[in-house]
Image (cartoon, rainbow, N blue to C red; front, side):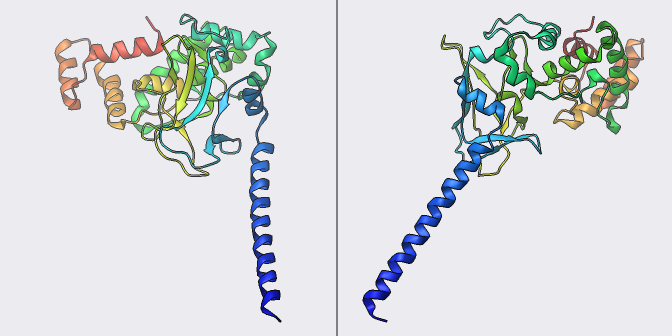
Length: 288
């Protein structure tokens, strides 16, 4: 075979490889678009921005579809994406938001509401995380949840909506499509930001670099042990504090004698006051 023929064949092979690579990339891109679920399509259609990540329905997590650099914006929208009023009021209660979820008549929210889980795994529906260090705290919650359900007229449909609000909502602001699909990680995630400069924008940025296929996180904020259990059915990241709180429940709150209470607190080895625990409970659970 002549040299010219070999050169032409070599060029042909190179062109074939390049064409195959482009085709694969196009197919990969198309698969991402085709794999985009209905909520993501709706979110983009009505003006939201979802960048380099998508929802993994099987594992219920957000994953990177491309490499993501620290500081990149992941999700962005304006205040009109806040359920139920399409604006930030700062006054709506969890209970009222649950009622709006149950009785929504605004067609704008149909796709979002249809995408929400239909079952409940939080304490308000009777599902309480099982942990050996939270025996007494769990007993407290069981009593509280009984009262909570009674206040809801034992309506499980309303309890499920309240659970969605507690686990997915932003206190006194509303609920947010797409933003509420990210799981929590204090090391890898940042909090969702609500601008205060009059632009009325909401955004979530990457705290760290992510590679394709990595789970992408946000950060739910700094909460008390009780709030983690009540809102997300999760233990706080400081398990020592969980143990300490439960110790106080089992020994401290049962003592009416102040000296015995003081001794009980001293035995925990932590600077945790009885009044602080009671205040934490009242604040997190809105009890009297």
